[in-house]
Structure formats: C-alpha cells, structure tokens
Length: 270
Image 1 (tube, helix red, strand yellow):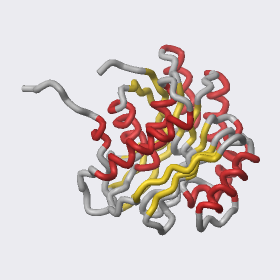
Image 2: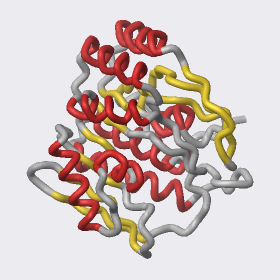
Image 3: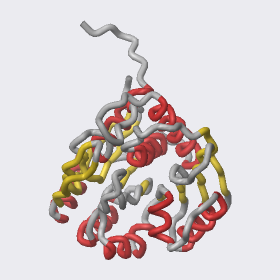
Image 4: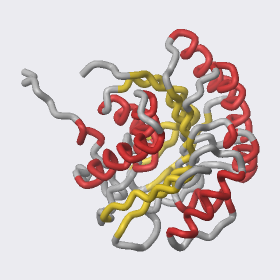
C-alpha cells in the first residue's frame, strides 16, 4: 500500500490501545495515510475505565506541532483530547503558525466509561477560539449538549444543535447519533447550505471503545486525500460501522473496534 497523504494528529493516548492517539494511528495507517503526532496527555486506562490522566506541558505540545511540521508538512490536522485552557491556547497559536487549512476537531470531553476529560473553563475557550479555526467538528450527543446547551432527544434536536454550533463560527458540523435510543443510527452533517442525514442500522454491542477517535481520524484521512467533507464523512462512517461489526471482543469492559477491517493482505508473510 502506498502512502496517499500525511496528517498530524493532536490528541491524548490510551494505554489500552482502543482509543486516543493509538486508535488514530491505526486508523490512518489502515487507510493508507501517514500519521504524525503531538501528544497532549497520557491516560492510564483499560476497557473498564480511566484510572488517571497525566498532562503534557502545553509548551511541549506546541513544540511537537511546530518542530514536526517544519520537516513534514501535513495535508490535514486531526485534533482530539485538549483537556485544559493552556493546552487549547497553545494548540490554537501553533495552528496559526503552521497554517494548515484542513482541520477536524473531535471535542473529546467524556470517556466511554463516563470519566470527564476536560475542564469547564477549557470548554469555554474551545468555543471562543478553536471552533472558528476548524473545517469540521464531530461531537457526539453529550458533547453537542455541553457545547450548545441544547437537550438532544431526537433528529430535529440534533439539527437544531448543529445550527447553533454553526452560529458559533463552525463551518461544518457532524453530530453523531449513537447515544439516542433507536434501532436506526443517524449521524447528521450540517453547514449553512445543506443538511445530510447518514442513516444506518444500529449495531448492538458493548465493544465501541474509540469510535469517536476513529471516525474523526478516518474523516481526516479521506479529507487529506482530496475528498470533500461530506464524502469524507460518508466514507468515515462506513469504515467505523464495519469496524464495530467486526470488533475483536477484547477486554472485560467496553472493548475496542476492529481498525484492521479495511486491510486485505495479498502477500503471505513467513
């Protein structure tokens, strides 16, 4: 498989390998994209929950971004876990310096087990500064509720919340509908010109750890290769649904999905 493009991933780690920067690297690699990283935090966790979070100094996060991109210029940037005001400010300044236009933000706020991963003040700074900087934001329903103050109970609420995010300065929004109780899963893409609902049958499984990280990186990967944002969302959703369907059932809690579902090995390795 040849390298199709290059992306920079700014995110926290997951020691269990199912989410965070580990899931991001697996996703990009499996889609033929070269990934560089700027680590924002180290989380000590497994499929049953987060034990602790160790922050990387904000200036060192900035150094990772600037130093790496001076040598290898990415075609797009994916942003995941930004847990503090200082980190968001440094990342924002760094993005201005490197001047990459294609930026996807996954506003990671709550771990699958329910642990909060970002401060309230950091959320305010994210809304004030970062939302205007990115090409697309990909919140799940709890994250969209936190960002907008809208209680989301159905598709219409999702669209209303997405339009509120547009008013905050975001160009494009993809709200993920996995938290709604329904047999159908609706992910909704919204900008000022259109609304696109991606509907799929909901796969019933506890093994969905890392779906948000994986989806945003898959979208970034397709976007970096020249697909438009709506098509990148469509292809990213298909990749994640296949990864959920073929999950390897690892761990005692919320297990990871199968990032390798896109790979078809044509060589026999001895």
